[in-house]
Length: 116
Image (cartoon, rainbow, N blue to C red; front, side):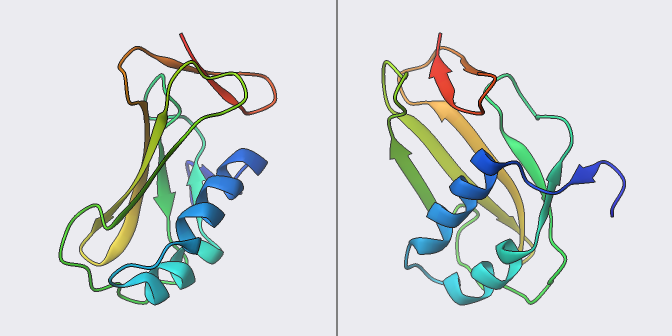
């Protein structure tokens, strides 16, 4: 396993699965990349964003850095939460998570996110 990375937790797997359900430019290659990727051990920020370590490095040709994103609510959120997939040099690099209305998201013990 790559240093600093681990198998995704259930909530991270669910986010990755949701991102793979969308149709967009390069989605076939991105699905292959995300299928067996690892995630950073430490979150990148207080909202739970995480880096990706892609094992299947099939190039994903996309014309924008963020080819897909999601917005939605969790059972405990006060407002929508945004999830963006960042692709650098044709490889999935990061999943960015933040509250659409501002503020900070804190990770709860069960992996759900709620807005503070």
